Image 1 (spheres, rainbow, N blue to C red):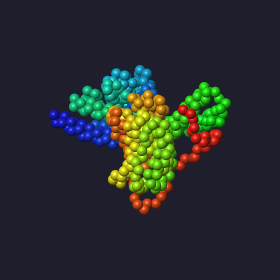
Image 2: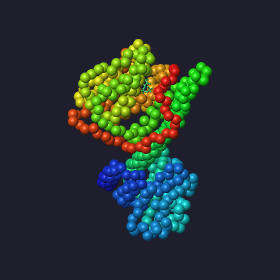
Image 3: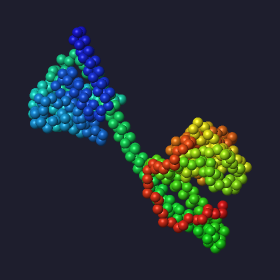
Image 4: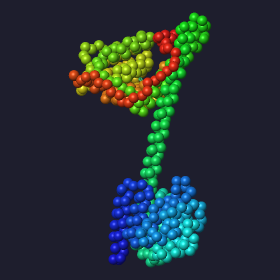
Length: 462
Ligand code: ADP
Protein backbone atom coordinates (compact mmCIF):
# COMPACT_ATOMS: atom_id res chain seq x y z
CA UNK A 1 0.00 0.00 0.00
CA UNK A 2 2.86 2.32 0.80
CA UNK A 3 4.37 1.72 -2.63
CA UNK A 4 1.00 2.41 -4.25
CA UNK A 5 0.62 5.60 -2.26
CA UNK A 6 4.07 6.74 -3.32
CA UNK A 7 3.18 6.08 -6.98
CA UNK A 8 -0.08 7.95 -6.55
CA UNK A 9 1.77 10.94 -5.13
CA UNK A 10 4.27 10.89 -7.94
CA UNK A 11 1.43 10.67 -10.47
CA UNK A 12 -0.21 13.73 -8.97
CA UNK A 13 3.04 15.66 -9.06
CA UNK A 14 3.67 14.68 -12.71
CA UNK A 15 0.10 15.54 -13.62
CA UNK A 16 0.54 18.96 -12.03
CA UNK A 17 3.68 19.51 -14.11
CA UNK A 18 1.90 18.41 -17.28
CA UNK A 19 -0.94 20.85 -16.60
CA UNK A 20 1.61 23.61 -16.13
CA UNK A 21 3.07 22.77 -19.53
CA UNK A 22 -0.39 22.85 -21.12
CA UNK A 23 -1.06 26.26 -19.64
CA UNK A 24 2.02 27.85 -21.16
CA UNK A 25 0.77 28.41 -24.68
CA UNK A 26 3.49 26.96 -26.89
CA UNK A 27 3.29 25.43 -30.34
CA UNK A 28 2.60 21.72 -30.89
CA UNK A 29 6.23 20.56 -31.11
CA UNK A 30 7.57 22.44 -28.04
CA UNK A 31 4.55 21.29 -25.97
CA UNK A 32 5.05 17.67 -27.04
CA UNK A 33 8.78 17.95 -26.25
CA UNK A 34 8.13 19.22 -22.74
CA UNK A 35 5.46 16.58 -22.08
CA UNK A 36 7.61 13.64 -23.19
CA UNK A 37 10.70 14.96 -21.35
CA UNK A 38 8.70 15.32 -18.16
CA UNK A 39 7.10 11.87 -18.36
CA UNK A 40 10.32 10.01 -19.21
CA UNK A 41 12.33 11.86 -16.54
CA UNK A 42 9.79 11.60 -13.72
CA UNK A 43 8.74 8.02 -14.34
CA UNK A 44 12.26 6.84 -15.14
CA UNK A 45 11.79 5.45 -18.63
CA UNK A 46 14.73 4.82 -20.95
CA UNK A 47 13.35 6.56 -24.00
CA UNK A 48 10.22 8.24 -25.30
CA UNK A 49 8.86 9.98 -28.34
CA UNK A 50 5.64 11.45 -29.66
CA UNK A 51 4.69 11.07 -33.32
CA UNK A 52 1.68 12.67 -35.00
CA UNK A 53 -0.15 12.13 -38.27
CA UNK A 54 0.86 14.95 -40.59
CA UNK A 55 -1.61 17.31 -42.31
CA UNK A 56 -1.65 15.34 -45.55
CA UNK A 57 -2.84 12.38 -43.42
CA UNK A 58 -0.42 10.12 -45.23
CA UNK A 59 2.44 9.93 -42.76
CA UNK A 60 3.24 9.52 -39.13
CA UNK A 61 6.12 11.76 -38.06
CA UNK A 62 8.00 12.21 -34.82
CA UNK A 63 7.57 15.70 -33.45
CA UNK A 64 9.36 15.24 -30.14
CA UNK A 65 11.82 12.69 -28.73
CA UNK A 66 13.82 12.60 -25.53
CA UNK A 67 17.55 12.83 -25.97
CA UNK A 68 20.14 12.28 -23.32
CA UNK A 69 23.74 13.37 -23.81
CA UNK A 70 25.15 9.88 -23.34
CA UNK A 71 23.03 8.37 -26.13
CA UNK A 72 23.75 11.08 -28.71
CA UNK A 73 26.91 9.52 -30.10
CA UNK A 74 25.29 6.12 -30.43
CA UNK A 75 22.19 7.47 -32.19
CA UNK A 76 24.36 9.59 -34.50
CA UNK A 77 25.50 6.31 -36.01
CA UNK A 78 21.94 5.29 -36.81
CA UNK A 79 20.76 8.64 -38.10
CA UNK A 80 18.56 9.36 -35.06
CA UNK A 81 15.72 6.92 -35.76
CA UNK A 82 13.49 8.17 -32.92
CA UNK A 83 13.71 11.82 -33.88
CA UNK A 84 13.57 11.19 -37.63
CA UNK A 85 10.87 8.54 -37.71
CA UNK A 86 8.66 9.22 -40.69
CA UNK A 87 6.50 6.32 -41.70
CA UNK A 88 3.70 5.88 -44.21
CA UNK A 89 0.27 5.13 -42.74
CA UNK A 90 0.04 2.19 -45.10
CA UNK A 91 3.13 0.54 -43.57
CA UNK A 92 1.71 -2.72 -42.15
CA UNK A 93 4.93 -3.76 -40.37
CA UNK A 94 5.25 -0.71 -38.17
CA UNK A 95 3.44 -1.14 -34.87
CA UNK A 96 2.97 2.62 -34.35
CA UNK A 97 0.80 2.57 -37.47
CA UNK A 98 -1.16 -0.41 -36.11
CA UNK A 99 -1.74 1.43 -32.84
CA UNK A 100 -3.20 4.39 -34.71
CA UNK A 101 -5.41 2.17 -36.88
CA UNK A 102 -6.79 0.18 -33.92
CA UNK A 103 -6.68 3.07 -31.44
CA UNK A 104 -5.37 0.62 -28.85
CA UNK A 105 -2.30 0.42 -26.63
CA UNK A 106 0.31 -2.04 -27.85
CA UNK A 107 3.45 -3.57 -26.31
CA UNK A 108 6.46 -5.05 -28.02
CA UNK A 109 9.82 -6.48 -27.01
CA UNK A 110 11.32 -5.78 -30.45
CA UNK A 111 12.33 -2.20 -31.07
CA UNK A 112 12.34 -2.88 -34.79
CA UNK A 113 8.52 -3.11 -34.64
CA UNK A 114 8.56 0.53 -33.57
CA UNK A 115 11.23 1.88 -35.89
CA UNK A 116 10.51 -0.18 -39.03
CA UNK A 117 11.60 0.47 -41.81
CA UNK A 118 13.97 3.14 -40.50
CA UNK A 119 16.46 0.61 -39.03
CA UNK A 120 17.19 -3.00 -39.90
CA UNK A 121 16.97 -5.84 -37.41
CA UNK A 122 20.64 -5.76 -36.39
CA UNK A 123 20.60 -2.02 -35.80
CA UNK A 124 17.35 -2.29 -33.81
CA UNK A 125 18.84 -4.93 -31.53
CA UNK A 126 21.98 -2.83 -30.99
CA UNK A 127 20.01 0.29 -30.09
CA UNK A 128 17.69 -1.70 -27.85
CA UNK A 129 20.63 -3.18 -25.95
CA UNK A 130 22.57 0.02 -25.63
CA UNK A 131 19.57 2.04 -24.44
CA UNK A 132 18.46 -0.81 -22.15
CA UNK A 133 14.98 -0.98 -23.63
CA UNK A 134 13.28 -4.23 -22.85
CA UNK A 135 9.70 -3.26 -23.60
CA UNK A 136 8.29 -0.51 -25.79
CA UNK A 137 4.79 0.66 -24.88
CA UNK A 138 2.89 2.40 -27.66
CA UNK A 139 -0.09 4.53 -26.63
CA UNK A 140 -2.52 5.97 -29.12
CA UNK A 141 -2.96 9.75 -28.77
CA UNK A 142 -6.59 10.16 -29.56
CA UNK A 143 -9.47 12.56 -29.31
CA UNK A 144 -13.16 11.77 -29.72
CA UNK A 145 -12.32 8.12 -30.38
CA UNK A 146 -9.97 8.87 -33.30
CA UNK A 147 -6.22 8.38 -32.92
CA UNK A 148 -4.08 11.14 -34.41
CA UNK A 149 -0.71 10.18 -32.96
CA UNK A 150 1.27 7.82 -30.84
CA UNK A 151 3.41 8.10 -27.71
CA UNK A 152 6.23 5.59 -27.28
CA UNK A 153 7.77 4.85 -23.90
CA UNK A 154 10.72 2.45 -23.69
CA UNK A 155 11.42 0.80 -20.32
CA UNK A 156 14.12 -1.45 -18.96
CA UNK A 157 11.77 -4.05 -17.51
CA UNK A 158 9.18 -6.50 -18.62
CA UNK A 159 5.63 -5.21 -18.78
CA UNK A 160 4.57 -7.76 -16.18
CA UNK A 161 6.76 -5.91 -13.69
CA UNK A 162 4.57 -2.81 -13.90
CA UNK A 163 2.25 -2.57 -10.91
CA UNK A 164 -1.46 -1.88 -11.28
CA UNK A 165 -0.91 1.62 -9.88
CA UNK A 166 1.84 2.30 -12.42
CA UNK A 167 -0.38 1.22 -15.29
CA UNK A 168 -3.14 3.41 -13.93
CA UNK A 169 -0.71 6.34 -13.76
CA UNK A 170 0.30 5.87 -17.38
CA UNK A 171 -3.32 5.68 -18.49
CA UNK A 172 -4.06 9.01 -16.81
CA UNK A 173 -0.97 10.64 -18.26
CA UNK A 174 -1.73 9.61 -21.80
CA UNK A 175 -5.19 11.18 -21.46
CA UNK A 176 -3.63 14.47 -20.44
CA UNK A 177 -1.10 14.25 -23.28
CA UNK A 178 -3.92 13.64 -25.78
CA UNK A 179 -5.94 16.59 -24.58
CA UNK A 180 -2.89 18.85 -24.47
CA UNK A 181 -1.76 18.03 -27.99
CA UNK A 182 -5.25 18.20 -29.43
CA UNK A 183 -5.66 21.61 -27.80
CA UNK A 184 -2.45 23.14 -29.13
CA UNK A 185 -3.04 21.58 -32.53
CA UNK A 186 -6.51 23.11 -32.67
CA UNK A 187 -5.12 26.44 -31.56
CA UNK A 188 -2.44 26.33 -34.26
CA UNK A 189 -5.00 25.33 -36.90
CA UNK A 190 -7.26 28.16 -35.80
CA UNK A 191 -4.43 30.65 -35.96
CA UNK A 192 -3.50 29.46 -39.44
CA UNK A 193 -7.11 29.63 -40.61
CA UNK A 194 -7.36 33.09 -39.13
CA UNK A 195 -4.25 34.27 -40.95
CA UNK A 196 -5.55 32.76 -44.17
CA UNK A 197 -8.91 34.51 -43.75
CA UNK A 198 -7.21 37.83 -43.03
CA UNK A 199 -5.17 37.41 -46.21
CA UNK A 200 -8.29 36.58 -48.24
CA UNK A 201 -10.14 39.53 -46.75
CA UNK A 202 -7.33 41.87 -47.73
CA UNK A 203 -7.29 40.40 -51.22
CA UNK A 204 -11.05 40.91 -51.49
CA UNK A 205 -10.74 44.53 -50.34
CA UNK A 206 -8.02 45.19 -52.88
CA UNK A 207 -10.08 43.54 -55.59
CA UNK A 208 -13.15 45.66 -54.78
CA UNK A 209 -10.99 48.77 -54.67
CA UNK A 210 -9.32 48.13 -58.00
CA UNK A 211 -12.48 46.88 -59.70
CA UNK A 212 -14.59 49.83 -58.60
CA UNK A 213 -11.84 52.34 -59.29
CA UNK A 214 -11.33 50.98 -62.79
CA UNK A 215 -15.06 50.71 -63.48
CA UNK A 216 -15.86 54.27 -62.51
CA UNK A 217 -13.88 55.94 -65.28
CA UNK A 218 -15.48 54.12 -68.24
CA UNK A 219 -18.91 54.31 -66.61
CA UNK A 220 -18.59 58.07 -66.25
CA UNK A 221 -17.55 58.28 -69.89
CA UNK A 222 -20.62 56.29 -70.96
CA UNK A 223 -22.85 58.51 -68.84
CA UNK A 224 -21.37 61.67 -70.35
CA UNK A 225 -21.70 60.42 -73.94
CA UNK A 226 -25.31 59.44 -73.23
CA UNK A 227 -25.93 62.92 -71.87
CA UNK A 228 -24.43 64.44 -75.00
CA UNK A 229 -26.56 62.20 -77.21
CA UNK A 230 -29.76 63.09 -75.37
CA UNK A 231 -29.18 66.80 -74.91
CA UNK A 232 -27.15 67.86 -77.94
CA UNK A 233 -28.53 65.57 -80.56
CA UNK A 234 -31.91 65.08 -78.91
CA UNK A 235 -33.81 66.89 -81.67
CA UNK A 236 -32.52 64.42 -84.27
CA UNK A 237 -33.77 61.41 -82.32
CA UNK A 238 -37.19 59.86 -82.45
CA UNK A 239 -39.16 59.57 -79.20
CA UNK A 240 -38.56 55.84 -78.69
CA UNK A 241 -34.81 56.21 -79.04
CA UNK A 242 -34.82 59.21 -76.71
CA UNK A 243 -36.73 57.25 -74.12
CA UNK A 244 -34.34 54.31 -74.39
CA UNK A 245 -31.32 56.57 -74.08
CA UNK A 246 -32.87 58.19 -71.00
CA UNK A 247 -33.30 54.78 -69.44
CA UNK A 248 -29.68 53.92 -70.23
CA UNK A 249 -28.60 57.24 -68.70
CA UNK A 250 -30.53 56.62 -65.47
CA UNK A 251 -29.19 53.06 -65.18
CA UNK A 252 -25.65 54.29 -65.72
CA UNK A 253 -26.13 56.88 -62.99
CA UNK A 254 -27.27 54.15 -60.61
CA UNK A 255 -24.29 52.04 -61.49
CA UNK A 256 -21.93 54.95 -60.86
CA UNK A 257 -23.55 55.56 -57.46
CA UNK A 258 -23.06 51.90 -56.58
CA UNK A 259 -19.44 51.94 -57.75
CA UNK A 260 -18.74 55.19 -55.87
CA UNK A 261 -20.26 53.75 -52.70
CA UNK A 262 -18.21 50.58 -53.03
CA UNK A 263 -15.10 52.65 -53.59
CA UNK A 264 -15.81 54.75 -50.49
CA UNK A 265 -16.41 51.60 -48.40
CA UNK A 266 -13.20 50.04 -49.64
CA UNK A 267 -11.29 53.26 -48.93
CA UNK A 268 -12.69 53.49 -45.41
CA UNK A 269 -11.92 49.84 -44.69
CA UNK A 270 -8.49 49.98 -46.29
CA UNK A 271 -7.73 53.19 -44.37
CA UNK A 272 -7.26 55.01 -47.65
CA UNK A 273 -9.83 57.74 -47.15
CA UNK A 274 -8.29 61.20 -47.21
CA UNK A 275 -9.69 63.75 -44.76
CA UNK A 276 -9.13 67.45 -44.59
CA UNK A 277 -10.78 68.72 -41.47
CA UNK A 278 -11.42 72.32 -40.60
CA UNK A 279 -13.43 74.20 -38.04
CA UNK A 280 -16.69 75.36 -39.50
CA UNK A 281 -20.25 76.23 -38.51
CA UNK A 282 -22.56 73.33 -39.26
CA UNK A 283 -25.74 75.20 -40.15
CA UNK A 284 -24.48 76.76 -43.42
CA UNK A 285 -23.35 73.30 -44.56
CA UNK A 286 -26.85 71.96 -43.94
CA UNK A 287 -28.21 74.94 -45.87
CA UNK A 288 -26.15 73.83 -48.86
CA UNK A 289 -27.55 70.31 -48.61
CA UNK A 290 -31.04 71.80 -48.41
CA UNK A 291 -30.36 73.81 -51.60
CA UNK A 292 -29.17 70.68 -53.39
CA UNK A 293 -32.14 68.55 -52.39
CA UNK A 294 -35.09 70.95 -52.33
CA UNK A 295 -35.81 70.39 -56.04
CA UNK A 296 -36.10 66.67 -55.39
CA UNK A 297 -38.50 67.37 -52.50
CA UNK A 298 -40.59 69.70 -54.68
CA UNK A 299 -40.75 67.12 -57.46
CA UNK A 300 -42.05 64.56 -54.97
CA UNK A 301 -44.39 67.12 -53.38
CA UNK A 302 -42.75 66.69 -49.98
CA UNK A 303 -42.40 69.58 -47.54
CA UNK A 304 -38.71 69.83 -46.71
CA UNK A 305 -37.86 71.96 -43.65
CA UNK A 306 -34.46 72.89 -42.29
CA UNK A 307 -35.44 74.32 -38.90
CA UNK A 308 -33.93 77.82 -38.76
CA UNK A 309 -31.60 78.71 -35.90
CA UNK A 310 -29.50 81.69 -34.84
CA UNK A 311 -27.14 79.52 -32.85
CA UNK A 312 -23.60 78.71 -33.95
CA UNK A 313 -22.55 75.04 -34.15
CA UNK A 314 -18.77 75.02 -34.56
CA UNK A 315 -17.44 71.59 -35.49
CA UNK A 316 -14.17 70.30 -36.88
CA UNK A 317 -15.10 68.24 -39.92
CA UNK A 318 -14.25 67.32 -43.46
CA UNK A 319 -17.00 69.41 -45.03
CA UNK A 320 -17.54 67.25 -48.11
CA UNK A 321 -17.68 64.01 -46.13
CA UNK A 322 -20.02 65.34 -43.47
CA UNK A 323 -22.35 66.84 -46.08
CA UNK A 324 -22.38 63.37 -47.66
CA UNK A 325 -23.86 62.03 -44.39
CA UNK A 326 -26.73 64.51 -44.30
CA UNK A 327 -27.23 64.11 -48.04
CA UNK A 328 -27.67 60.40 -47.53
CA UNK A 329 -30.11 60.73 -44.61
CA UNK A 330 -32.26 63.37 -46.29
CA UNK A 331 -32.01 61.46 -49.61
CA UNK A 332 -33.35 58.34 -47.87
CA UNK A 333 -36.10 60.31 -46.11
CA UNK A 334 -37.22 61.79 -49.44
CA UNK A 335 -36.97 58.41 -51.13
CA UNK A 336 -39.13 56.56 -48.62
CA UNK A 337 -41.64 59.31 -47.77
CA UNK A 338 -44.75 59.36 -49.96
CA UNK A 339 -46.02 62.53 -51.65
CA UNK A 340 -47.63 64.99 -49.28
CA UNK A 341 -45.29 64.03 -46.44
CA UNK A 342 -42.75 66.10 -44.54
CA UNK A 343 -39.00 65.80 -43.95
CA UNK A 344 -37.55 67.95 -41.18
CA UNK A 345 -33.92 68.59 -40.28
CA UNK A 346 -33.18 70.02 -36.82
CA UNK A 347 -30.03 70.87 -34.92
CA UNK A 348 -29.55 70.91 -31.16
CA UNK A 349 -26.70 70.99 -28.66
CA UNK A 350 -26.42 68.18 -26.11
CA UNK A 351 -23.56 67.44 -23.71
CA UNK A 352 -20.68 68.86 -25.75
CA UNK A 353 -22.12 67.47 -28.99
CA UNK A 354 -24.33 68.80 -31.74
CA UNK A 355 -27.11 66.47 -32.81
CA UNK A 356 -28.63 66.63 -36.28
CA UNK A 357 -31.96 64.85 -36.67
CA UNK A 358 -33.71 63.99 -39.91
CA UNK A 359 -37.37 63.12 -39.34
CA UNK A 360 -39.74 61.90 -41.99
CA UNK A 361 -43.36 60.86 -42.25
CA UNK A 362 -42.50 57.76 -44.27
CA UNK A 363 -43.29 54.08 -43.62
CA UNK A 364 -40.97 53.73 -40.63
CA UNK A 365 -38.79 50.72 -39.90
CA UNK A 366 -39.72 47.45 -38.22
CA UNK A 367 -38.02 46.94 -34.83
CA UNK A 368 -36.50 43.64 -36.04
CA UNK A 369 -34.85 45.40 -39.00
CA UNK A 370 -33.07 48.07 -36.96
CA UNK A 371 -29.85 46.11 -36.25
CA UNK A 372 -29.33 45.55 -40.00
CA UNK A 373 -29.74 49.20 -40.93
CA UNK A 374 -26.16 50.38 -40.54
CA UNK A 375 -24.59 47.23 -41.91
CA UNK A 376 -23.08 46.81 -45.35
CA UNK A 377 -25.76 46.12 -47.98
CA UNK A 378 -28.35 46.57 -45.23
CA UNK A 379 -31.33 46.89 -47.54
CA UNK A 380 -34.45 45.79 -45.77
CA UNK A 381 -36.58 43.09 -47.33
CA UNK A 382 -39.94 44.69 -46.74
CA UNK A 383 -38.85 47.87 -48.51
CA UNK A 384 -37.19 46.03 -51.40
CA UNK A 385 -39.85 47.12 -53.86
CA UNK A 386 -39.32 50.75 -53.04
CA UNK A 387 -35.58 50.27 -53.24
CA UNK A 388 -35.81 48.50 -56.55
CA UNK A 389 -37.88 51.37 -57.87
CA UNK A 390 -35.61 54.07 -56.53
CA UNK A 391 -32.31 52.29 -56.91
CA UNK A 392 -30.48 52.03 -53.57
CA UNK A 393 -27.20 50.32 -52.89
CA UNK A 394 -27.69 49.44 -49.23
CA UNK A 395 -24.33 51.05 -48.51
CA UNK A 396 -25.44 54.61 -47.70
CA UNK A 397 -26.13 54.19 -43.99
CA UNK A 398 -23.04 52.02 -43.51
CA UNK A 399 -20.89 54.75 -45.06
CA UNK A 400 -22.69 57.43 -43.01
CA UNK A 401 -21.97 55.50 -39.80
CA UNK A 402 -18.27 55.13 -40.64
CA UNK A 403 -17.95 58.82 -41.55
CA UNK A 404 -19.73 59.99 -38.39
CA UNK A 405 -17.60 57.69 -36.20
CA UNK A 406 -14.38 58.86 -37.85
CA UNK A 407 -15.44 62.37 -36.81
CA UNK A 408 -15.93 61.21 -33.20
CA UNK A 409 -19.72 61.07 -33.31
CA UNK A 410 -22.52 58.49 -33.20
CA UNK A 411 -25.50 57.72 -35.41
CA UNK A 412 -28.79 56.09 -34.44
CA UNK A 413 -32.42 55.79 -35.44
CA UNK A 414 -35.78 55.99 -33.71
CA UNK A 415 -38.67 54.65 -35.69
CA UNK A 416 -41.98 52.90 -35.45
CA UNK A 417 -43.59 51.08 -38.29
CA UNK A 418 -46.11 53.35 -40.00
CA UNK A 419 -45.02 56.34 -37.88
CA UNK A 420 -42.01 57.63 -39.81
CA UNK A 421 -38.36 57.58 -38.80
CA UNK A 422 -35.89 59.92 -37.16
CA UNK A 423 -32.22 59.38 -37.95
CA UNK A 424 -29.90 61.33 -35.65
CA UNK A 425 -26.15 61.76 -35.65
CA UNK A 426 -23.93 63.63 -33.25
CA UNK A 427 -20.63 65.45 -33.76
CA UNK A 428 -18.31 66.88 -31.11
CA UNK A 429 -18.73 70.63 -30.70
CA UNK A 430 -15.52 72.56 -31.11
CA UNK A 431 -14.24 74.48 -28.11
CA UNK A 432 -13.97 78.21 -28.56
CA UNK A 433 -10.63 79.51 -29.84
CA UNK A 434 -9.53 76.32 -31.63
CA UNK A 435 -7.77 77.01 -34.86
CA UNK A 436 -8.46 75.49 -38.21
CA UNK A 437 -6.53 72.24 -38.49
CA UNK A 438 -5.79 69.93 -41.36
CA UNK A 439 -4.99 66.27 -41.10
CA UNK A 440 -5.00 63.27 -43.34
CA UNK A 441 -5.58 59.68 -42.29
CA UNK A 442 -3.54 58.51 -45.25
CA UNK A 443 -2.76 59.65 -48.72
CA UNK A 444 -3.85 58.20 -52.00
CA UNK A 445 -2.96 59.13 -55.51
CA UNK A 446 -5.60 61.41 -56.96
CA UNK A 447 -7.89 59.81 -59.48
CA UNK A 448 -7.12 60.48 -63.09
CA UNK A 449 -9.71 60.16 -65.78
CA UNK A 450 -9.61 60.60 -69.51
CA UNK A 451 -13.29 61.11 -70.11
CA UNK A 452 -15.31 63.67 -71.98
CA UNK A 453 -16.20 66.82 -70.05
CA UNK A 454 -19.00 66.31 -67.51
CA UNK A 455 -22.50 67.40 -68.46
CA UNK A 456 -23.37 70.89 -67.21
CA UNK A 457 -26.43 69.66 -65.31
CA UNK A 458 -28.32 66.40 -64.93
CA UNK A 459 -31.10 67.70 -67.17
CA UNK A 460 -32.52 64.38 -68.12
CA UNK A 461 -36.18 63.99 -68.88
CA UNK A 462 -37.69 61.39 -66.51
P1 ADP B 1 -29.99 52.57 -49.78
O1 ADP B 1 -28.98 53.06 -50.75
O2 ADP B 1 -30.60 51.26 -50.15
O3 ADP B 1 -30.98 53.60 -49.38
P2 ADP B 1 -29.08 52.84 -47.08
O4 ADP B 1 -27.96 52.19 -46.37
O5 ADP B 1 -29.06 54.31 -47.15
O6 ADP B 1 -29.10 52.20 -48.51
O7 ADP B 1 -30.42 52.35 -46.43
C1 ADP B 1 -30.60 50.98 -46.12
C2 ADP B 1 -32.03 50.62 -45.97
O8 ADP B 1 -32.57 51.23 -44.80
C3 ADP B 1 -32.92 51.11 -47.09
O9 ADP B 1 -32.90 50.25 -48.19
C4 ADP B 1 -34.28 51.11 -46.40
O10 ADP B 1 -34.78 49.79 -46.36
C5 ADP B 1 -33.94 51.52 -44.98
N1 ADP B 1 -34.14 52.96 -44.76
C6 ADP B 1 -33.17 53.92 -44.75
N2 ADP B 1 -33.70 55.13 -44.49
C7 ADP B 1 -35.03 54.94 -44.33
C8 ADP B 1 -36.13 55.82 -44.03
N3 ADP B 1 -35.96 57.14 -43.84
N4 ADP B 1 -37.35 55.26 -43.92
C9 ADP B 1 -37.53 53.93 -44.08
N5 ADP B 1 -36.54 53.05 -44.36
C10 ADP B 1 -35.31 53.55 -44.49
